[in-house]
Length: 260
Image 1 (cartoon, rainbow, N blue to C red):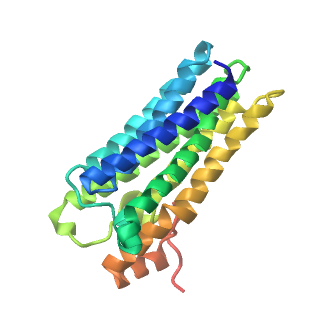
Image 2: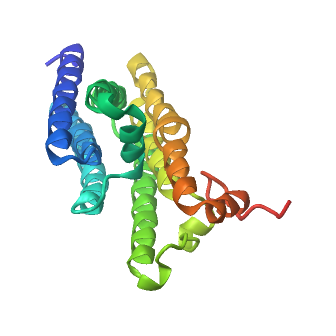
């Protein structure tokens, strides 16, 4: 298939997948499941892009997209299984009231559009005509650092929450000592590897992959990540979370802020 045909197929498939996510969350009464569907659908799009391209570059893209989806999707699945609805979606349910399901349908189609933009970086990387080289190795290294760092941050938080002694407390150990959202930082870092795999001399389409880390940063830091998560934390933890905000950076895992 030509690249435009693959792109159109991905857009349609992701839209249908998020329609399925809407049906699933409505049946379950728990909108947190949509994140599982979104992650695996995007990963599947990446695997399809890679396997549909010739040569070792396509295999590499398919493996990377599959690894990303299995790691993140598996984590969200384990977190969601038998748990209350994610606080972000619970907040939307309360805010939207009787129109929750109607508005959620449109919201999930927006998520499908975002996934389609991200998936274009998979396609651009897979169809890059250049031979694999040093730049690609750097891209893989960034991707691997992002996946590993995100896995470490999630594991540290999960371990903290499993300890009954920490019930009601805020995690400020490990990576969470230096960032309020180290998992989001490493997610963006991992997406920074895709432009290095996609950009090559004379391959204009490769530059489109820059949209992936930019979009992921905007989504996590300014739209669907930090803002609703911290609003929920402020509602549940109040002054304790405000103090954590004052002394810990929101995104970049850097040393604690100096007292004002």
